[in-house]
Structures are given as C-alpha cells and as structure tokens.
Image 1 (cartoon, helix red, strand yellow):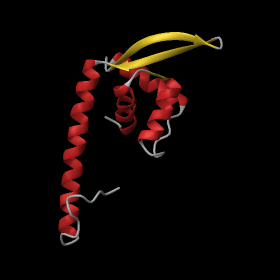
Image 2 (image 1 turned 90 degrees about the horizontal axis):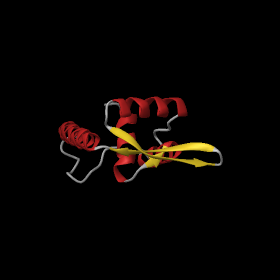
Image 3 (image 1 turned 120 degrees about the horizontal axis):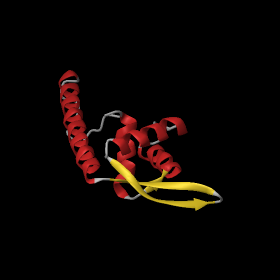
Image 4 (image 1 turned 30 degrees about the horizontal axis):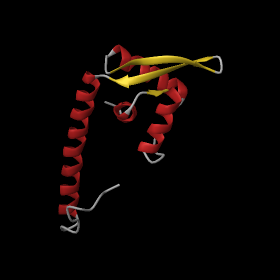
Length: 113
C-alpha cells in the first residue's frame, strides 16, 4: 500500500469526506509532507472504490457542481488496521536497529522523524 493510499484511508477513517476534504486531511495528517494533486487523488479514489476499500457515501450539488463524499468500508478499515500494525512493527524494528548503531543512545520514547 502506497503512502498516499494509506493516508487517504486514514483520512476517511474518521468521517466521510469529499475530494477536497480528503486533500486537506491528507496534508494535515502528513504534516504537509504529502500534497495530493487532483488527478492523483481521483485516480486513487476510483481504484479504492473498485477494490471496495471505500464507497460513495452521498452526493450533493454545491454551486452547480457535484460533490461526492466517500467513506471507508469495513474491508477498508481492516486493510488500514493491518497496514498500520505493519508500519508500527517496521518503525519499532528501525528504532531498535538505530539504537544499536548509536550505542543505545535512543530510549523507547524517542521518535525518529
């Protein structure tokens, strides 16, 4: 699962969002590290709908334009949870290895960014 996909699913875990809301949430969740472009976002949303990880929650017309809201499916929640756990294990392994390299200078509360 790509980082952008992980962040899109994470953004939708809390509540249904429309496309621009997803863009804003991903930027916030990533502390500005990931900025989704519309083509990338809508391609990813279409793919995630096709994979049944997300689904259309509702549509509404705002200023004459269709706004589609997406929500995380149960399968999406399971996939997100599994990926989060995998990333957690990998981060722990990296911190352990870095602690060995640095002669144990890192304690368990140190966060590597």
